Amino acid sequence: MNNLQKQRISACMIVKNEEELLPNCLNSIKNVADEVIIVDTGSTDHTITIANNFGAKIYHHPWNDSFSEARNHSLSYASGDWILQIDADEELEQADIPKLQSAINNPRYNGIIVAIHSTIKDNVHKFYNTRIFRRGKGFYKDIIHEQIITEGERLPTEIRLYHHGYNLDEKRMQIKWERTTRLLKKQIEQNKSNSFAWFNLIRNYRSQGLFQDGINAGEEALKIITLNPCSKNTGRNDNTQHYAMITYETAHCYLHQEDFVRARELCDTTLSILKESGITSENVDITFTLACTYLKEGSYKRAIDYFKRFLSLREWYLKNMDTNSLMIDTLGYDYAAHNGMGYCFGNLGQWETSINHLQKAISCNPKYLTAYRNLASYYSSIESYNNATNILLKAISEGIADDEVLLRLGELYIHQKVYEKATPYLEEYLKKHPENKSILLKLAWLYEKSGHLEAALLGYRSVRAGSESHEGRFRRENNPL
Image (cartoon, rainbow, N blue to C red; front, side, top):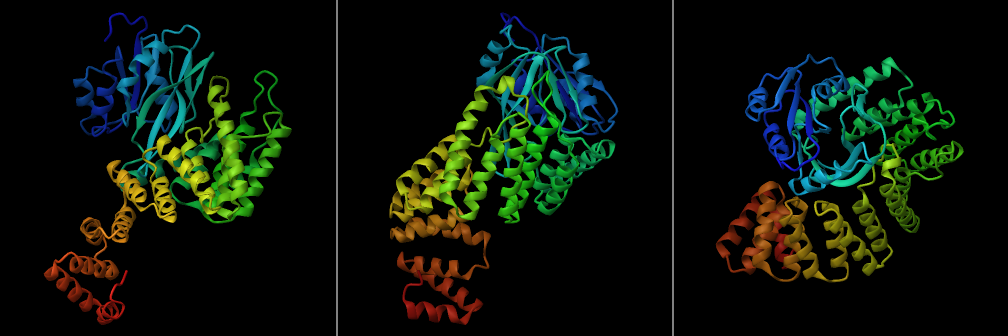
């Protein structure tokens, strides 16, 4: 630790069976935390041994179906000036430690907002949350998707926490979703008007691809939630704000079901309610949702207008995070907006503008594969095949390429008559899709063009074994590509 540091930090965690991810988490905070407080709720693996080896202070509490209860226990044991709340499946960016140390020495603030980079299905989603706060100035509420309540002003920062908890294997994610669903339903049973629990339940369904369940829950919630005027003291009404988030999640479920009309109806109705309630006539999440709706409908000009408005609103929200306690989902979606605009401009034939936005999307989020695919497609549309190839190679270098990227690279190299470079990508694709006879036929043809006649003959025989017609068609067409 830096001996000149004026403020002490207590890193507070709750854990259960976290032996796999806990070492990386603890390593990431060892140079910033003066003490590590761990509340264990029943680990049966090596979690306790790992924590002991790092010198953590460990306390045991039974699990009572409440994340807030466990987190508040951890706060009660802390002795530092500041709390850093971190989970075992998270890591602190080492390069941001100086920013953190500078922030906690600012006497104006009681809370520090950080940028959480969460890996979800090979994409990185960024959102903001208060994770650092003065001891005694914050506590948690809600049994699941618990919220931190802090006193005083909060400092918005780009201090990075990397979250890996949504990138687990399918079995562990299923266990996680089922537990979350059960606890959220329990919350709703205890209080049917718990708007925050409804919002998270719908989100949980959407995350699992259970879109009809999300729609059913969303429509029920929108009928139950009572909307009252804003509080004179705070200028806010949590139910109304959560109503907007319920609309956001439900509308996206409708988008997945391709019911664009109902998605737009929900968004437009909620914007009217927000305006009447005196909160705002606009909402950044709903504006983004409307942009996506118009894109999917093919109303590209209207989609572009809404994406532009979203980016403008996003900038305002980012500058005013300290005074806005509403949970906002899309503040990290600048890359998605630029991708959407790139897609729309491309469909309008405005290639240069399209490519510009897609390049911005990749710059904002180098792990967003959709932007790479769209950019490669639009480069191909203007016959810039070398650029299309290079952008897909960049996707591979970022470690995000899928089978479609391999296939498209192979075909791009074939189009450029660079047969030797096309071959390995199609071979790799065929390993994963051995039943695809058309790719096998292309490979055989590539082997023939490259002078690998024995390999070509073997490929043709394999195709013929699967279908007698393939080789005859190849001979008739001379070039099956």
